Image 1 (cartoon, rainbow, N blue to C red):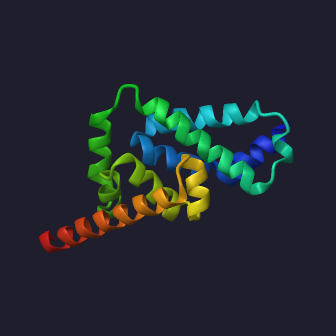
Image 2: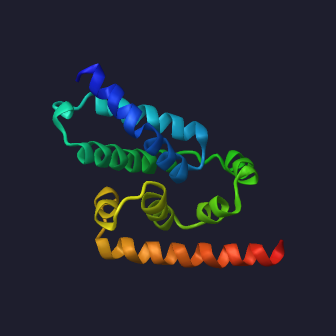
Image 3: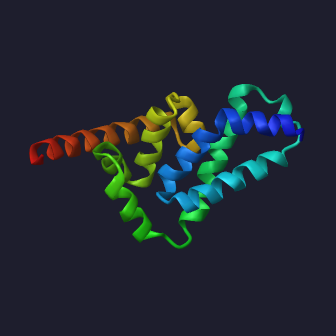
Length: 152
């Protein structure tokens, strides 16, 4: 693969890949590792320089989810996750406590501004399940945010 193609993909989609990995793994160390693995895999793809713009982003995000699943099945860094949560805002704290599927759907829908069809493709689930997970995530976050407002 040409270096220019890799550089362009990292420039255009690197933040999205890292944010999704961090959302999924809740560890900057693990997110860094997944980020590197995703772009190493991308560099080995043949004909990637001929992919359409949306195809590249979808492939990168799908690879991030897949590698994140593998990584999250390894040792979980609970101490680091707790420390990070202390420094995050109320919204992120609420989102980070969602079940994995809801958290990923929420992040891809709002953080990456992807539509339900694209989210369904990336997460290998039906569009209807994406809508169900997103609705449940919204309701949970909304309830938690209202609860936090009453406490403050």
